[in-house]
Length: 420
Image 1 (cartoon, rainbow, N blue to C red):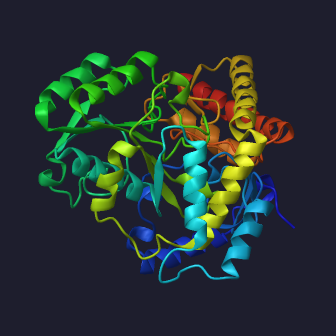
Image 2 (cartoon, helix red, strand yellow):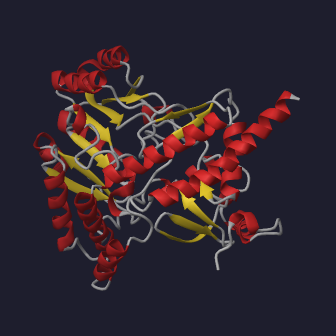
């Protein structure tokens, strides 16, 4: 029987034991984004199972999940139709000498769903896809310079990693930076690149950790498209984090701006490892010339899962549902904050929300809020954008808001101690 987080004592935990074992055999006990996640006190590192919008740690505690595995879970953990499709394909095999028919089927699905896409090719991780986009853009234009927004995250490879340990200046020699949503800054970066401009690479919206999220303005999106058109460069949209959550056709479709290339991953296979690049005919030949590959890039199981995910997303209006649930969460948090007299800022699309506390430069309030909410069964994050899934329903949101009530009480107590 699953134990509520509030019922567990402070005895040694299975999570702590696993951390100790991991520290002996894994550098630092963990790597990558989970090292940099800055999770508050009491958050587990190891998990045992998940279903729908619920996740359980190795100590049996259950939480309503607002991270969705950091984005890959779109329909809910272990969605039965996705699992059935994956298992049916696994029974026939996964890793062959070449791709299965499902690769062609999935590419056709993407081309039919995404207006800018004339073709698609597949990888495993978001960094694979963003790197492939940049490589294709350079091959197609014969140029080197790529414009990227300051603070944007495009993966963990040397050319774009947010951490510089082990990285050389040469790895980033041809990146030129601009400020997201700042047209003048973007135009100045394009002028600096001059005749060597290969691409403008931009996330679907600004989702840098620890700062207010920003949706792109129509002016900014159209300026990016105009710069690429004038220079003969590629407009690349990094859809890795936002893809399928805002608009199944592409996150900038509602702005009337279509990219030449787009990088997809996370949600496209509902938790199975898969990424994709979609592109238009202008870059089709370049995509045939570059050498991008991986031993497991043709795995059929993840592609079968992706076909099921895309079909369900189309048939059930997943973006519309998670938008409604995100609004319910946002409005509930705002009402609780107001009731407790606590100033917060909520930003970003409701499907991928962020709540920050005013006057909280060291994130003490955010951490206190999240730790208390966690003890009452809601898994929030104090600095990173969160994620909703199609499995979140009104009752789940309302239950999470009860946990958030305890979070706001913890912040109020923190403020009271600071005032003494």
